[in-house]
Image 1 (tube, rainbow, N blue to C red):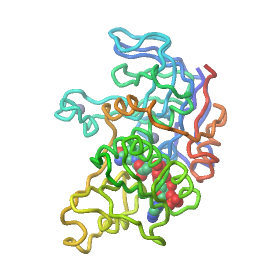
Image 2 (image 1 turned 180 degrees about the vertical axis):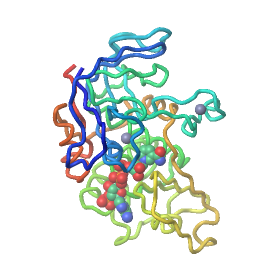
Image 3 (image 1 turned 120 degrees about the vertical axis):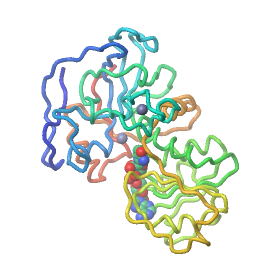
Image 4 (image 1 turned 90 degrees about the vertical axis):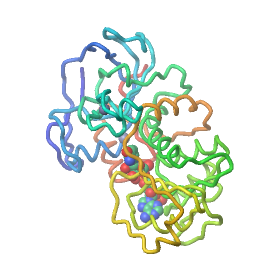
Length: 337
Ligand SMILES: NC(=O)c1ccc[n+]([C@@H]2O[C@H](COP(=O)([O-])OP(=O)(O)OC[C@H]3O[C@@H](n4cnc5c(N)ncnc54)[C@H](OP(=O)(O)O)[C@@H]3O)[C@@H](O)[C@H]2O)c1
Ligand SMILES: [Zn+2]
Ligand SMILES: [Zn+2]
């Protein structure tokens, strides 16, 4: 099969991936093989390609927003049949035995394996995945290219949203409006929760309003009209934490989505932190993915994707890195149907 492999990390402009012919994999016990239709591009792919994240094996096929068709089924698989539409996301597998795995909190498992990092991912014609972790997509009424970004920003956004505990009638703040926040807004909207978006660029302010935010502006220039019941921080900007807390009602929750952040200083504990909670998003778990897929047909999604041919993966990575995509999400087309 054709696959893009990464052997040695390097600046994305220097095009560190290579398009090569590799043996087509076959599913082992408990696995299925997907014939890949599309794979979404994530900023994390750039972080792995460029060396911000360590290379965990060489060579590796990147890509963790995979949508495909099951075309071979290994032994002991009940969940899928040949011809099913299925997806694979960042969580490839976990140990299944630790206290976290045994309590459906596998996001904390220390043995987690990640798709397109520890094991080969989706920038190829085929991939084998554990059936237990693969996502059934037959019921999802979206095009493959619209499903792909759902499998990373969508699931992460849903997971962050769940951590807020927001309920119908609440006001939810979104700080930063990238692809992840878009999905949170749509989930919140479907539950009768108002969203208040603080983002700097005119493009994102416009995008948030179009998506249905009750208020969207740069809060450094324009005051939010209401206090919030909960808020999610998306960019790694630790300096936003105290201003966000001061915008929360008593009993409110601040959720931090980033995987790293600049220093967080809280100067006024009594006024700004006392009586509020801070929670952090730490990896994704299966229940978040499955719950999102259950409600996705009810969300009024207009997923903006820039579709690239398979051969142009590195152009998509470069544009993603530079923030120069025409649409919020880049998706690589591997096969027509
Ligand atoms: N914790 C986990 O396990 C996990 C899993 C998946 C993803 N994530 C995280 O989820 C986050 C969301 O990713 P994403 O790609 O959707 O978002 P993103 O593009 O990294 O950031 C969202 C937006 O924040 C805005 N922003 C940046 N600095 C700002 C500031 N100082 N004040 C206000 N807004 C600011 C930018 O828009 P403007 O230019 O309009 O301001 C940017 O588009 C990332 O941090 C990612 O690491 C975490
Ligand atoms: Zn991702
Ligand atoms: Zn475990």
